[in-house]
Image 1 (cartoon, helix red, strand yellow):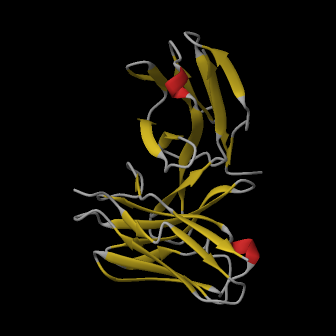
Image 2 (cartoon, rainbow over the protein chains, first blue to last red):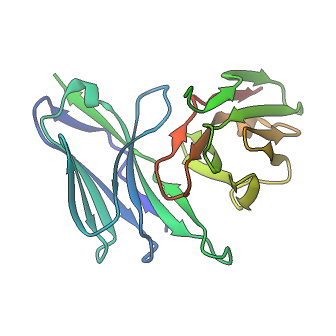
Length: 116
Length: 114
């Protein structure tokens, strides 16, 4: 089982709709969760981080975390064509025998297409 | 700040040649990461450093790959000898004082091994 799993898509939504992106992870002790956006040919950039169960809102973006189900999602309200990109879910994983160090593991990403 | 700076942006080489990728992290950042991105495997962590010390190199594919961080402002990732399956985009990233916070990525190096 992969540490972080995402549906590769593409996920197509009409402009103005809500886009829902999902991610599951395997390590029950993971504590930090991130969503990065990557435009084609560009580097990833952080758009949301979440550390506790529940919802976290930032503008049109809402991150949702359910640690019991090992599930994290990203909702994009009022989707715009400029939101078309690949969205990468990232999760912290404890490194064994490292004295407490963690590393951030990425999913393979979901490609989102917002249709004008 | 100029952000994370990587060089070169593109590298085309022949199988068997040595390849060296370079990275300058954001000044003051304690953590530096090397990632590799391919369509099939996504973004994979190769190695990361804390205060110039390698913490986790479990993602380094094999002995052909090596990484160094001689000082706080410079790191290299070397592949010797290179193989066609090494073709990918290699990203360097840095973070301020934890591996669990925002990663700032460089523009990446597109490596093609013929």
